[in-house]
Image 1 (spheres, rainbow, N blue to C red):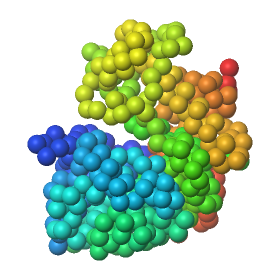
Image 2: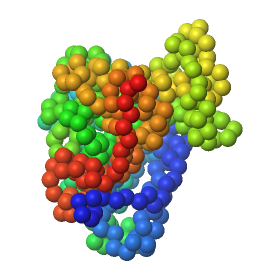
Image 3: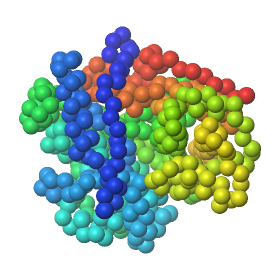
Image 4: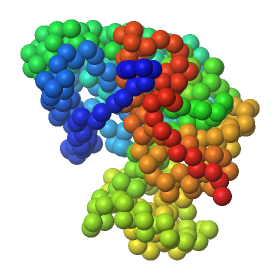
Length: 447
């Protein structure tokens, strides 16, 4: 932080490769923590006094503990077990009632449905602590367990209006409240790193873990500049979350029918958003391609002309299945007896245009449900670098698209740490002023 600006520097990146075991698809959580520890050790040795750490991650997934010990590897959201939990939960509490409480679209991987399956398997009888993934990492860093509203709101157990644990949902769904961690405010200090972590990773005893907006989408929304009033944000990485920031949740039947979810944002705000497939399909297609390089594929894709019927529905569950993305796309078209785009550049163009169409439709629904006109879409995350996607989104939505910054979750995470430590003051708008002063953005106007 310097002169009202923030700078960030990527230090370490590592793969998050799930483990396929006889029990299902799991996070390789021990390796991830080891990678984080090694990165902290390197940063500490290079930069000297490491003041603080903030952890954000994908929502919904979690670990269960008994007396401080992890009860098995956490499942990933791609494991199909949660479908059984969704059906069991809705037999106890209907979807409409549940939505009025938690404001969440009933996606199969919501923690509530995963926990229902854990209960069926008897795991909750053993557990005494439930921790979402970023809180699990914080627990291992400090030996202190807690959570905060942004990640807790992805569980389905948080009341959307009060942003506190909802006993009515827990009672109806059969989830024991004793396993839920205490809720802190976003930006609170969790604790100093534990003596064991200090020794293992060479960190000073003064290093603190801050409870940032630990749901990566909420962290990204903090760093979405929203230059124009009532603009939408689009956090586009493997997944895409498109929405608007509002003061109170909207849990109407119209919002539920349109598949919108209400999740907690910074300082008590609500993020009314839609979960959509993002660049995950693109990443998978690139991995399949012999060259394994995105740039030349995008250059070739720019000259591809698609037929009007050569778009897919990126939200189809078919595209959540592990396996080759190209085969899933071919199957999608075959089921509808439509021509398949030929070759990897055409498949890339098909996915990008389909994503842009999905974003445009979500914006139209958002305007109706939120009763506001949305003048612009701010794309942050990896999608902000994809000019083909940005222009297609502008063209299909009829809105100005403003792209950047790219590392939005990181920036939002760091800004909340800085505010917690007294380096900057103010509300979310003040933090966005720092972003506006610090990072260039690119505009795409509809053609």
